[in-house]
Amino acid sequence: MRKKAEILEIMRIFQQENPNPQCELNFHNPYTLLVAVVLSAQSTDKGVNKATEKLFQVADTPQKMLSLGEEKLKGYIKTIGLFNNKAKNIMALSRQLVDDYNGEVPADRDVLTTLAGVGRKTANVVMNVWHNQPTLAVDTHVMRIAHRLDFSRSKTPLEVEKDLMAVLPPELVKNTNHWLVLFGRYVCKAQKPLCDKCPISEYCHCKDKKTS
Image (cartoon, rainbow, N blue to C red; front, side):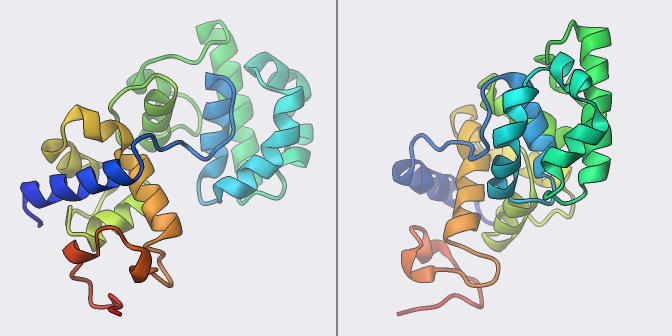
């Protein structure tokens, strides 16, 4: 595993390159963020945004979602992978929010993970993006980049999260998910990494690294 000082240096470079990275999902309140993140599992943000553009015009609160109903919800999100199961979870979590939390999205990660279809990654995103907390969501991009840059050799998202949290100060944790996701999405792509555009090329020791 890479030394802490090098990990911090790489993250500082990401910070210089993009001091205020943003979540690419569209949302306008904590509920629409929660729904968007649930929908984004194994799907692209672009695809989710296309579906939610019209969905959130008619259902941007749990009460409105329950009124919409599961079948109509499916009509809005049918272009998204696993939409049947996601629709079921969205209706169930909306019912939980109305029945148990007065329609409000709890500002507590542990409580969030008790909602239908909400795991630690989703809860971390909501706490980070909406509540500005130093939580770290480990998705497929973060997992791949963390391994590729030797930030962690752990095999599970939780263990990778723990490895990164152990070395990063809170002010860097806050944006780490965004930095690694955007880096993996636009520069260090899984199929064809754009090494000539990489801001941390000097720290990369990958076998498939392309040199000019």
